[in-house]
Amino acid sequence: MFLCTNQAHKNLVKGKKVSDQNKAGLTNTMRDRLRVPWIGGAIQVSFDSLLPVIILPLVFLVSSLSLWWTAFSFTTIGVFILLISNFFVRTIPKTKFFFVWTVTSIVLLYFIFEFVVIPFLEILVEENIALSVLIFGFIMCLYLMKLRANQLIAALDDESQLSFNGKSIEGFYACKICDCKIPDKDHHCVWFDCCISRHNHCLFLLSLFFAIAALLYSSNLTLTSVCHPYEFFKTILLPDDCSDVYFQFELGLSFVSAVYSILIAILLWLILMQQMFLISVGIPLKDWVKLPLSSKLCLGLNRLRPHNRGLIRNWLRIVCEITPKYTPINRDV
Image (cartoon, rainbow, N blue to C red; front, side, top):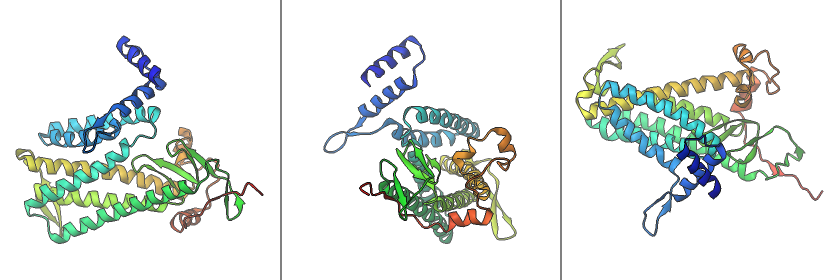
């Protein structure tokens, strides 16, 4: 690692291209050297996990200055996510950057809503409770989803020679992030930091649903508090004029958090729709991304689908799945 780091430094100074191996060595060295002063001694903190904690609040503060800064900041952060994700996947695939980004977004949005939006005295107690229930539902689904994934990995043998009800089974797929072979794997979700498969696929869908509902509901409550609202069907309030939100810092910050919530909700809705479609046609996401463009334009229906059992059975397989118990084969027999 030391040689890779030195070579990476030399290439950077000379303006030469740095190989992925040297990038990984340089990145691991930075993660090992970065420490934060703490009671009882400095603690090691990986810089990739620290980035979201620094970047997200800064983006929110800058975006609250004006509409131009909002558009510029969100566009820049989108490009940054695309570039940094490609870098981390190649150099440090086990990075916690994406999961920390998810946690930081939840904490930041909830903090702004409770301590900036609520003091405007426009939110009813019942509305705040309803939002808290949706957030609690998302957190519980996320917790159970990761718990099932961790329990499954702990039960799997390193050599992946496993049995199910006494019979050897196939369908195990390697995950370089989990460093394990996962049965019936659909994909690895970096934002939730766990593999998605039959054992937690239903919880994954529920977590997406609760997250979308919480984001859209909180954004509507926020926008109707900081903008001029109008009545829709005499019972529903929708935002109308938000032209003066940047005149006050608290209003601008609340507006930015609502816009961020809407953008994330749209992305999650697209993921949920994609998941529902792939389950219906019986194609795992890991297989879908490998399909050529011509097959994707045909919705994958022109390809062999070994996982397809029909629309109803595909969904029953996900919704009614009981967590299987995988145990190592007795090698002494």
